Length: 201
Image (tube, rainbow, N blue to C red; front, side, top):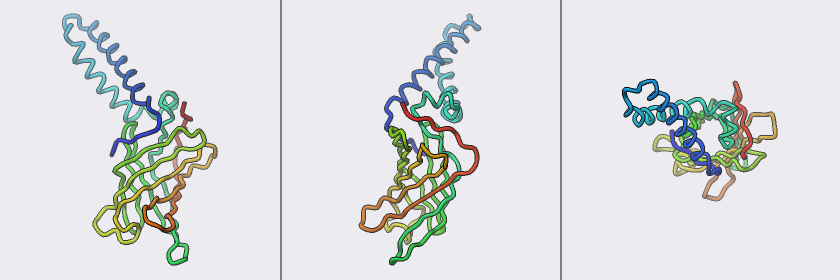
C-alpha cells in the first residue's frame, strides 16, 4: 500500500492533534493510577499515541461521525466489477475488469485486473473539493515485463469519478495516455455494504 494525497490540506494536522491530546490525557490518567511511577507519562504517551493511530488508521476513520471531521475522505475499499471499453481498428471492444481497492485512512492500494494484464498503483490521490463528485487518480505499473495489449510501456495514469449526487455506486473514467489515440474507458460497480461519503468542508 502507498500513501495517498488529497486536495484538503488540514486532514493530517487535525487528526494528529486530536490523537496527541487524547494520548496525553490517557497517559496522565494512567499516571494517577500508578503514583509510584511518575516517569511513566512520557513512554505511555507514545504508547497510547501509537495504539490510537493504529486503531484510527485501520477502523475508526470509517465511522460516519468521525468521517464528518475527516474532510470527506471517501471509503472506496472493496471489490469493484466492471469493464474496459476501447476502439481497435474502428471496432468497439469491451473487456471485463476487476478493481480491488484496499484502503486505510493513510494508505491506498489499487489492483486492476483484466484478462490481459494486472496493474498496481505506485502513486494515488483524491480530489475532494468538488461537492458533486469524488475523483480518484493513480499512476499504475503493469505486473510483469511484457504488457503488449494495454499500453506499450506498462505505465500510465487512470482517473475515475464517483458522482455524489446519484444513488448509483459506480466509478467511471478513463486511462489517460501521453500518446495520441482514443483513451480506454473504464466503469466499475461495487457490491455489498456502502459507507456514506460526506461532502468536504
